Length: 294
Image (cartoon, rainbow, N blue to C red; front, side):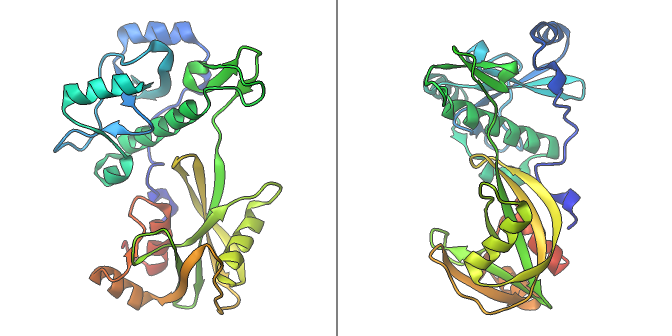
């Protein structure tokens, strides 16, 4: 359950960031290299029935200006294609399959495909939410192979990432897990929250744990990170040791409690407690604490 087992980060894809401005080079490579085009609509992909991959086309889809160069994998070029509603409906009709969230299919995807799915999702959501310049309000146009937006007044915009901390707090053979009011019944996870303006990551860890549980912590250690474009987060995962154990809830949390290792394993196996899905870094943190994948 080491950090290198965090899902979505394992890939051999070379993003080739230095090529994004080289339109002619990419155009030439398209002529003699195998190309893969991934249709994306509102951050979702099409997962054909009885398949362990999302739909990938060998020809461009949608408008050329909405093609985003993702990089090179196994000497083959990968692109995401942001579709309009009309284009998405037409493709769904053609394939007799709907655009769906990666959440339902993540564990069925091989590492490289899982990474590409999340990568293309993040770009697509950013592009759709930033049609207009936030400075002057004029229309943005995609540049840098889909990785930059520029308005008619020259204001540049790049993909926006929101850092969030997620923490496994332990004390002896117990760990601290909580659940929010909006979550399905019996679902518990590690405590988490967004880093605020002017705040260090370490301060955010201490603040979020205290706000959500009233527990003070020490010995904060970095575990790993996970891209999380739902819609635009980057999860920064930590372990920490509790100094206190008295719990007081804030308005955000429905329940926060201490779980002993053996109880958590038993209850999770029985289904009376539902933990974060295996493709989340929260699951990595919990599994690392328990010493087994759960």
